[in-house]
View 1 (cartoon, one colour):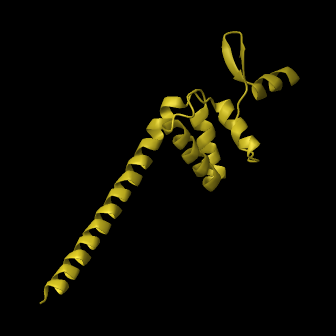
View 2: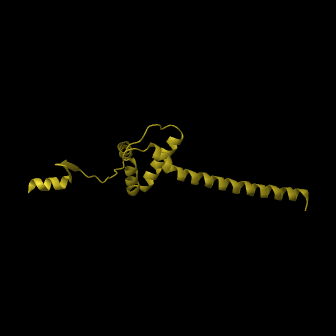
View 3: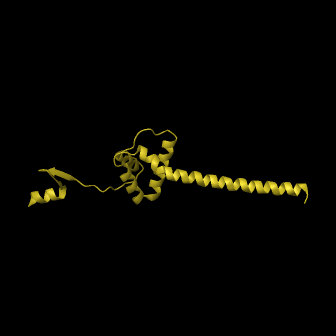
Length: 126
């Protein structure tokens, strides 16, 4: 083998090793981001924010995932520094044109007992 052929093989092998290392590094970074997403959001989510996000994921999986990723990116970049309540997140989805349906329950406290609104109205009608 000549020196040129040997040098060519070394370069080719070095290039393959470098590419393999970049792919491994990129996969590791992506894995860390996905693991940290919940931790990052957990520091900023208050109130019923997780409930709204989970409902949005169930109803609009792609859009909710995109919103979640954007929120994580904004938090990590330092552009978002305030806490996010369930109402804030709900309004964000509404402004994006997504009607997230949440399960709601109205309860009434009467005579030391907690009753559902349905039971309260039933009692009054009978």
